[in-house]
Image 1 (cartoon, helix red, strand yellow):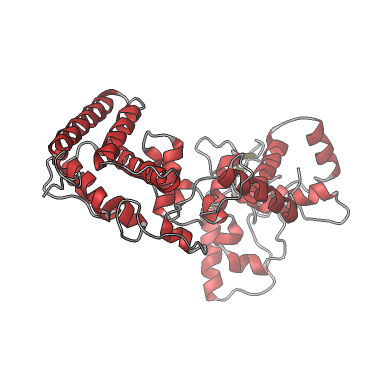
Image 2: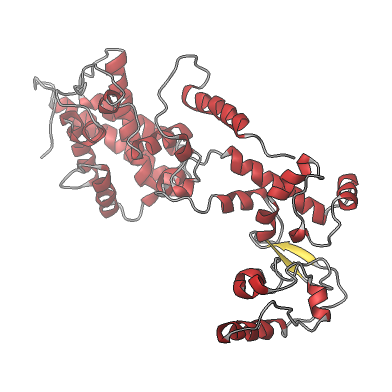
Length: 408
C-alpha cells in the first residue's frame, strides 16, 4: 500500500537483470539490450517485462477503486478518518495524514483521470475536477474560466442549486463570454436526480477498473517498432526472444563482441570474411547455398540477401501462407546459429551446408507440431521437400572437392 523507494526498485531490478541475462548461472554475461527497452510493451518494441515503478503505481490505484466500490473494515476506517470532503478529487496531502495515506493521495489524480462519474445527486462529484459531463473535466475544457472562479472545489449538487451560475473574480472579455456560453449550453442539458453518483472506469471496455488498463496508460507514450510477426508466430519463446535480439542487432556475433573490447578472431567460421549479422545469415558463401536451395524448393529464381528483402521475397512467393513466413525464417536462422556455435565453441566444423539444411528441416518439422490444420500440413510437407532436395544435391556433390553446389 505504499510507493516503493527508488533505491529498493533499483536493487530489485539488479536481481531481475541478472536473472534475465544469466538465468541460474553464476558466470557474468553481457547485458545485450537496455533494461528500459526490455520493459517497454511488446507493441512498442520491447519484451513486455513489467516496469516495477509503473506496476507499483497501477496497483496503488486499485485501492481507490476498492474504496469507492467495496465495503469492509478498511473502507470504514478510511472514510471515517480521512474522507471529510465528499469528493475524492478534492483530497490533498497533509502532514497530519499517515504516510501510507499520503502516498495513496500521490496517485489519486492518475486514478480520477481514468474514471467517469454518472452523476445523480451530484453531492460526491467535483464540478470542476471530475469527469461527469463528457469524458473530460470542466477545468480542462474551460481552463480560463477555472482559473478565475471563486469556488474551484464546488460540487455538482452545489452548482445545480445555484442554477449553474459561476462566481468569478473579474468581468469576462469577449473571448471568455463565448466560453461561458458554451459551458452553459453544456450544463443546461444536464439535470440532477435522486440517485447516488456512480463512478465508472472509462479506460476499460466494461466500466470495471483493471490494473492492466492503468499500466497501459502509463506506457502510452512509449514508441518503437512493432514485432507482431515474431510474437504471433507459434514457435518456442526462446526463439522469439532470440529473433527480437537480432532485430536489435544485439546477438553475440563477433563484430558485436568486438565492440565490448573483445580481441579474438573476427573471421566467419564458414568462410574467411568478417562475421556480422547480415553476413552470417545472408551473405556468407555457405549460407548463400542454403538460401539458394530454399529458393529452388519454392520455385524462385533468386535468393534473399537481407532480412528486409526476405519479407518481400517470401510474401511474393507465398502470399496465402503468411503464418509460415516467420517460422521458415526462424528455422533456417536458428540452424545456422546452432551450427556456427558448434564450430566456434566445440570446434566441430560442418562437412557440408547440407548438415545445416537438415537441421533446419528438423526444426521446421518439430515446430509444425505447434501449428494446427492446414498450417501444420504445409510446414511438414515443406520440411520434407527441403530435406529431400538437400540430400539430392548433396549426392551430386560427392565428387566435388568443396562439397558445395551453388544454384544459379
